[in-house]
Image (cartoon, rainbow, N blue to C red; front, side, top):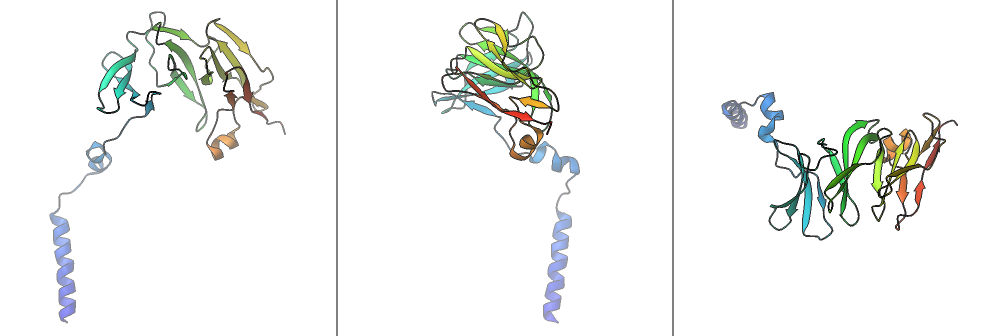
Length: 220
């Protein structure tokens, strides 16, 4: 009997203590109140001393350079309100450096296809010249990628592979048989994208002179 009394006392004590605690609303639970501090997606730089992040101010989008040891901004690499394309600001949602970090591919206006695949408008920002140029005027591109020398950019469009000559400002189509629901060049099919998590299907060689790419035949 004494054991039962102790059990009942503990139960009532626990209940009273629980009821005395402040209540939480769904808005508080799922809102910013309990959201942990986090680090935005960053890009480590080749010197091992700095990293970069996308940021935003009242005027536009920035790519900021931080010192690893202090976490403080040491340079603004790109500013959409200053580094414009033909006088028009562009607002990148993602970016990637060339191997020598002298150019940046800026990704804008991304349109998703499936879970990992998408197309976007890409621009090249030359850090030395402070010049923004467009990769292609022929429609949105997929997975635009510099070669090793950053003098060419490969991408896919409409199931075909293209290369853009940065200095010659010339676009060359490498494949011509791509067709929706039939032949895919330079991208993966839905099964590979969904089950293996990759959608880009082309790769530069280390010298940046040749491209290897997947071709999928969906007519079978």
